[in-house]
Image (tube, rainbow, N blue to C red; front, side, top):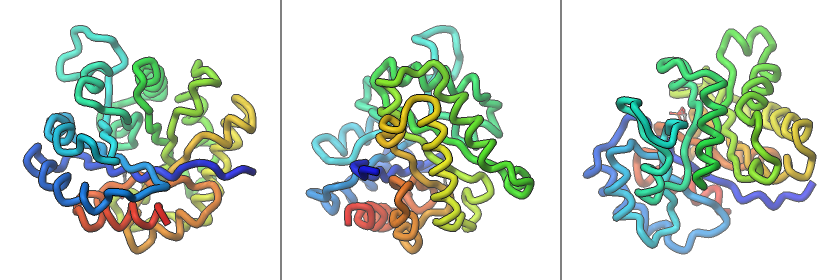
Length: 255
Ligand code: 13P
């Protein structure tokens, strides 16, 4: 299988950092990461930090991402953000269906699908999160859960578009717990997700889709995940907040 996929390291800042703090982060990392190749770098920031990052990351090799998007063009949706509002700030990636949004904000597979379609229509790369919780894992349902989530998220997405989607496999029990999946286990789940995409489209298309691992990834363990043939980078929460740590994660992926 041709391995031509560029790994992608995306920081998910969650509800951390003001615009001023984001600016400090950008100033600290942009120079250190200048000229780093062979890896795509993304920072998924809170909406209120996007303007500051657009300015401080301009001309750098670090792309801007958001953590959520609404699926409508515009409308009476108090508190929501439309795709073109993100594009206005130079946002290129958007996390869709993070387990925290599914759990705390009642995001369903149907909503995730609409968001994926809206993002693609607007030229944003959706980073679609899938993953099982602890009970599902213990019940041996990991493969069926991620398969169901991936199929639902990609419903109606055209073959030409799907190669532009990034999927993040994030086992819920590994998020923010310090308990990461073993790299081998994560690789098997990611392989199953790729198999699902091959069933939905074809093998060649599936080989082009980048699938990241997320869940307690840090500089100390990222190499194990990156060494796996199916895993194309990481979606990182806590360890993406400190500039030194983010730089280490990216450097590991560029090697
Ligand atoms: P942690 O890296 O903090 O476990 O978070 C993972 C995550 O949810 C990234 O989206």
